[in-house]
Image 1 (cartoon, one colour):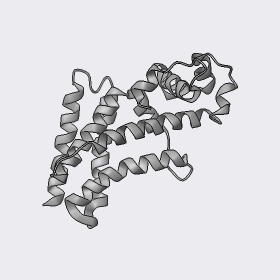
Image 2 (cartoon, rainbow, N blue to C red):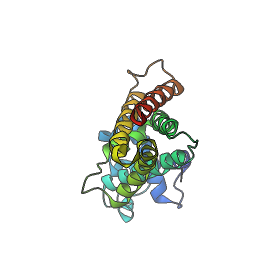
Image 3 (cartoon, rainbow, N blue to C red):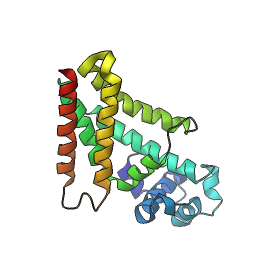
Image 4 (spheres, helix red, strand yellow):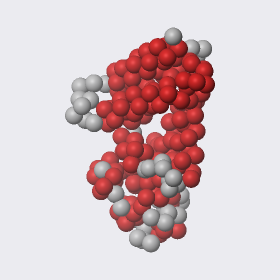
Length: 197
């Protein structure tokens, strides 16, 4: 289910997990990740405080579900990026990340909040790995196996930085989503061309 579709889902004895994830996004949008709780999500969708536990053991698991949806959506957008020039593709992938963060700030905040270390939710870690794999593949095409890891990391860092800027209303005031995405794309494309040289 896409982020947009999840936001339209109400709970009428239908898909409670999707309704809870949509409620979580709304709560994070209003109060930040720190203001989220499983009981608030349950109340928002009109179910008992115990109902969410049939699907999520705790609030962090529900947030991981939101992050998984986010990685799936951004990954689907990244897979649509095409073109013969891998440096330009890397730049376009950075633009996708920046646009996503600007259009879905609450989901981006949850994705940033959910850790991907050894104790991470396995499904979340797998989705994140698939998304990063798209970037790594393009980096490999730019500079081969020796520099691909370093280039991919640099590209992710730049894209993540622009994504963070795009989600900060003070830092991105007066700048359109397209302008931020274009800046991220230009810098990452330049990085990739320098790495290929």
